[in-house]
Image (cartoon, rainbow, N blue to C red; front, side):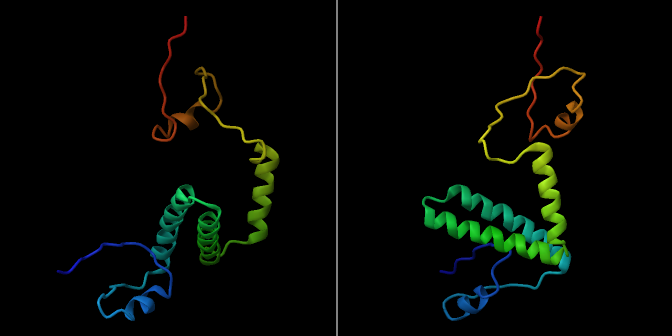
Length: 136
């Protein structure tokens, strides 16, 4: 019996060579274009972030965070992002919005139609689920 597993994902560079050593399996691959690679890296970032969430212990967490950093580093390289610019924007956002030091978790937001950011939240109903409340 032959098993065919669909991957359709970016893999680490040495995986094909490692798989080739086992004569009981053949991995079919292709080289991605620059644009395809960036898209695949972003998808891989979501996959690895999921694995961070699923990690069961500190060792797994460290490994998965390392994978996330590898992917971020490659995106930075391929997109020719200036690290200093990125750090500067990060610092500006931290000054403006704060960072994540206090562990503040948003449960929900109630607002009226005059709320200045209403359209921002309404434009993404998958992310910000909205119910209308008729308060008397």
